[in-house]
Length: 184
Image (cartoon, rainbow, N blue to C red; front, side, top):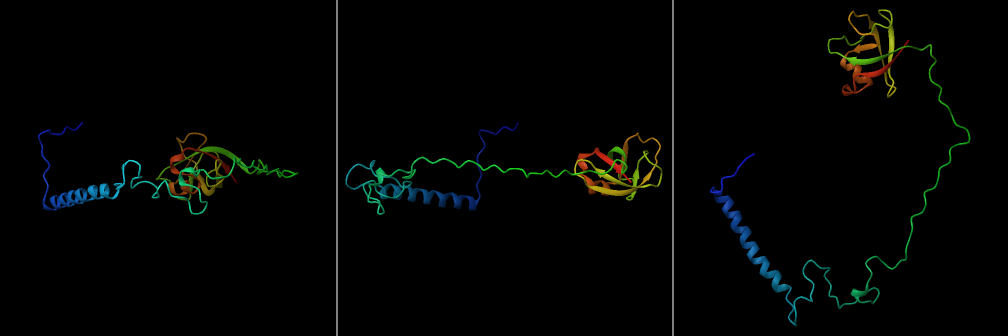
């Protein structure tokens, strides 16, 4: 928490003083000018609209309709209107069913993660033989990449580790670990 010194003064340089004097002069000239322009010479000054008003006198008539301005409805002349109901889109008579891959293509499932130390074309995975070319598919988005498997001691079952650049092809780094399907 910062505290300000109540006895401290604001120190202005020459440019700041000049700007302050200019702003003060403009203010002192503008306020009386606005007051003089909005004065009603005939009577009370409160019946006349100020500078922020629409800009027409309440006694004037609208040129288009000939109606006094005070009688105009700001919402318009039309009656109540309702939104049209949305049209329902009917599904086609026959539904097309997407058929996935055969179970023979998927050889394993795993949780996928990444390490910088893994070579680019290599995936550390103990679920298949060493040196197999496999396709690794991200189940969440369907993106895939290929790599050669390497069996590694100490790697947990069901975990596939790949290089960062290879992982980025199928998922965002912040999504790790991801669900993978290993195909041949």
